[in-house]
Image (tube, rainbow, N blue to C red):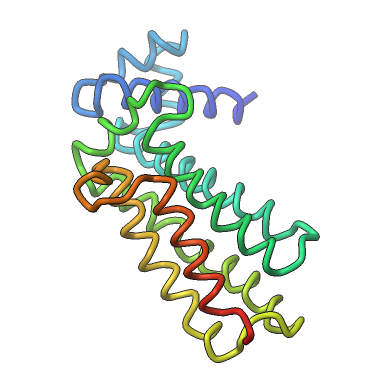
Length: 197
């Protein structure tokens, strides 16, 4: 019951933050939208900042859990890597475009890049570890070049910082590439760069 109530408060806050912005969302708004009293909210969170931090952590966990499914799948290394990278693109697209909120998360994040940066920072260590697992699996099976694989994790991290930025800013026309072209080019670039020749 405790976890269920806390989860409901986090989800309600996430939706309100996405639609109204953090600054314009009050503890009363969260209480009203969740059908809980303010006292209940303060049982779980000291203030709005704590609720916001819980929303950020939840988004980070969401990113990591989707990637973990791919990493633990029985796919061959190249297909696993392709699926991993495709899933990573889907995650950033879903987050920025909004899974169920008509793009409201774009406005939520674009008001302050620190918000998306905090989600990314919370997830990046785990993401790098999972990516390295996929790469190492390919190396151990003789599919990926060990030398190239050695720098793949840092390259993937840097590439996705740019991908995240482009999705957030929706500047694809400006850089002369569509979302689909960017996704396909990045995936092929990474795969072709580490395949054993």
